[in-house]
Image 1 (cartoon, helix red, strand yellow):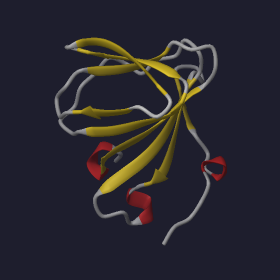
Image 2 (cartoon, rainbow, N blue to C red):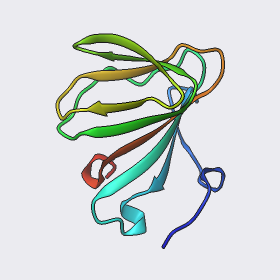
Image 3 (tube, rainbow, N blue to C red):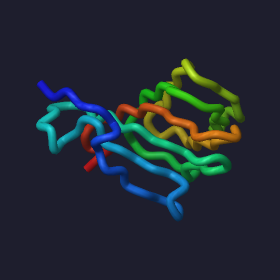
Length: 112
């Protein structure tokens, strides 16, 4: 069993430090199927608008995020969950004035 806190996991930094990713549980932990990541978006930051052939399960821990897809845009806040289907174009944009945090679970191949 692995028990920890995100504060003890060094984040990967993207887009000049505007987006941080911490792999909480993943292939390096011998997780057989899924990787759980914690993303932090600084105010105004976003992930790229992209797609891939695996699903995402997302839970908004804190903040105000605009979710963009081919279906349009939806604003979500703390407590919201999002299912991104395989090959669905998507983007997460922090539209709040504080840090936004979300958990993102993907198959291990999405984290390798």
